Image (cartoon, rainbow, N blue to C red):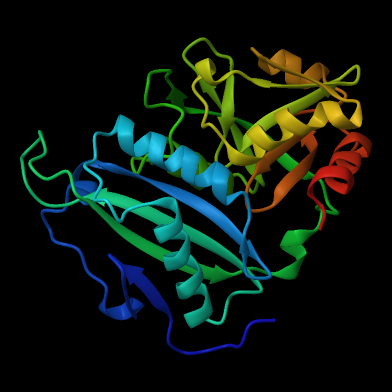
Length: 283
């Protein structure tokens, strides 16, 4: 267990400072427009899990968003910055990391400065986070926000309004999570996770063209599930498909996999999710 401390530190543009002293300008473009992206990552025993996947996605996002990267701004540089902050916060054993890249000041709508400012934060995780959830999730469909597919829909944009409103609705409804749909009333993803179903021994998840985030654990499972005898399909999923599935589970890089117990009046088991957790995620 990490050592508890009163002072929490963050890393802002390479400088480790007290969280209480970190600041951005009122003209910051990420604050104004959500102009930037982020990665949510997990540290276990001093190792940043799936770091190659995370930085591959991050740098693809930075290219798409047209940031101008200085020569030193590499995956190895950012990895060093993340681990140094976790060590400073005594959180190297088990921690959640948020690395946000944001465009700085300049320009009303069109930016004038493409330099990648960054902010790194770490939080200690409860050890139960490293286990398959004992109690299945209770979820429902959130229809207040629609996911649209475009070249930006798969990245973790700093503009997260739809997901934030879905999370607020989840809290108000006393649920554990919610499914977001696209403009065709098909499944895109969940508030902070990708969606999988198991049906007749096949693991199915929405294609990225359905508007969901290109999740790290999603990618990991699509690559590794065939090795344990589970066929995978990236496809379209309707709400009806979810209600007819044998199992339903959600994935992200922090908790790995969480099985769903109930969606509306449909109840699910967790035999397949338990096997996947044991074979591919547990450590």
